[in-house]
Image (cartoon, rainbow, N blue to C red):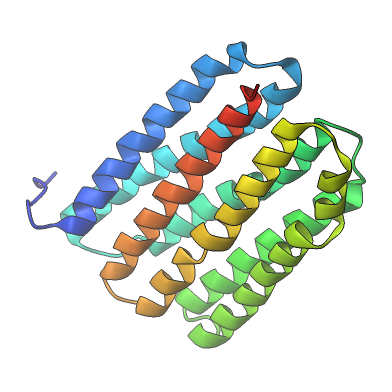
Length: 219
C-alpha cells in the first residue's frame, strides 16, 4: 500500500472517518447495556450503520490512496445498506412510545431506497446524471415532508416522551441540513466530490448515531 501523502486531503478525510466510524461502533456496542430496554434496538441499529460504513471506508480509503480513483460503486453499496437503516430509525424511535402502523415503515423505507437508486443510476451514467439528481431529490423531499408534516410528525407530536421528541426533532434536521451536503458533492463531480461525501458521512452517520445514544440517556 502506498503511503498517505501530506497534501492528499481526500485520502486524509477517508482515513479520519474510517477510524471515527470504527470508534463510534465500539462505543455504541459498549453503551448498549447502559440504556433502557426500549432503546436497545435503536442503539443496535445505529451500531450496524456505523459498523457497515467503517468496513466500507477502510476499503475505499485503500482504493483512493493507491489509485486516486473514485470508489463510487463501494460508496453506493455502503449507502444502500446504511441509509435505509437510518430512516428506519425514525420508525424505531416512534415505536418506543407506541405501536406504529407498518405502512409508515414501508413509506420511509421506499423513499430512501428510491433516492439512492436514482442517485446511483445518474452517477453510473445509466441514466442522465441530472435526471438521476432530480428524481433522487424528489424522493428526499418526500422524506422531509413525512418527517415535518406527514404521519411520522403527527405521531411524534402525540407522544409525551421528551426523549423521543428530542431524538426525532434532532434527527429530522440532520436529514434536512446534513443530507443537503450530498447533492453538493453530486453536482461537483470531481475529486472534491469524495471530500464532500466524506464530510457528509462524518456528520450524518456519526452525529446521527450519537444523537440516538444521547436520547437513550436523556433525563
